[in-house]
Image 1 (tube, rainbow, N blue to C red):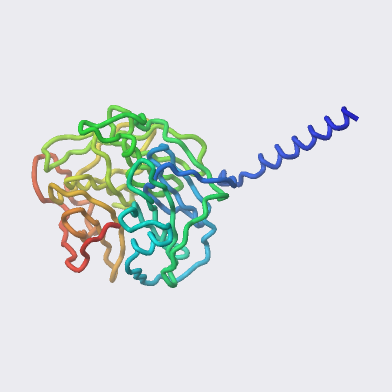
Image 2: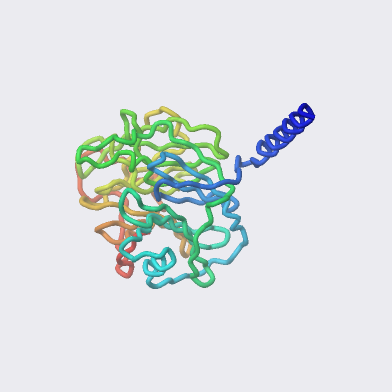
Amino acid sequence: MTNRILLAALAALLILSGSAASAADANGFEPGKVSLQSSGPLAFGPNGILFAGDSVAATVVAIDTGDTSPAAATSLSVKGINDRIASLLGTTADQILIVDAVVNPISRNVYLSVSRGRGPDAQALILQVAAKDGAISELSLGNARHAKVSLVDAPSADAKDRRGGSLRAESITDLGFVDGRVIVAGLSNEEFASSLRAIPFPFKAGAKGTGIEIYHGAHGRFETNAPVRTFVPYTIANEQHILAAYTCTPLVKIPVANLKPGAKVKGTTIAELGNRNRPLDMISYEKDGSHFILMANSSRGVMKLPTAKLESYPGITEQTEKTGVPYETIATLTGVQH
């Protein structure tokens, strides 16, 4: 009887092990709780897959939202969204921070990376704003199909900058999905701390990022330690590039083909958009057959930049103020964060 019980237990264990092993799908997704230690940038990939950056944990998580019902593009206005989020989460508006906002290109629903609280004990959440009526709900992460990858070259958890700020908190400053790879901007622990990591998806293992060097015209020097603040993928002269914006505010083009693990790459600065300013977010769009970039900024409003001749601007290599790609400020867009 004892042997029979033991054999039965072993058989059950093998069955359970086989079930667990087969739970992963072609994207490497398995069901389980998604634990985010910090709220960070978001980006959409194919088929409703949402990528979320977690700087404190130095990881990128891919989440199968299941949000794949097509919908037509529409406008959406949600007034008092901070108060509505606070009410949903049982707190006050001053304890809510919207870290990032992205639109699902299939369903047009808006996803928000939100911090409930402002200190080290803040709770990281992802919320969904319905495109049809502005209803706000929390994306359930208790048993979501997901996969994650760790950044192998992130700054250590206790690393500080010269002002005493956390370098780990800057390990992920923006995300994008380009040609089957997740592009992760941020700081690394390498000599060229400014890094762009191109991580193939489905995830297999993390790899070192590409160290990025740029010439900062307003500062009059080459820099390797300032992180990309925000970027947008863009095709220039039939070649895929990253258009990256930095604090104070150089705009730099970097060929995606050059993003290789451990490499060092010099970006081409094609615009200086003004000192004492921090870029917050960028999108590209087309209107009436012309193409543009919109960039939200901390102190210079929303800039509109034409992209028709980005390949024609020579690289900036001398100290200068505003020059390069021209822009206009959209006066009707004030206080834009994302």
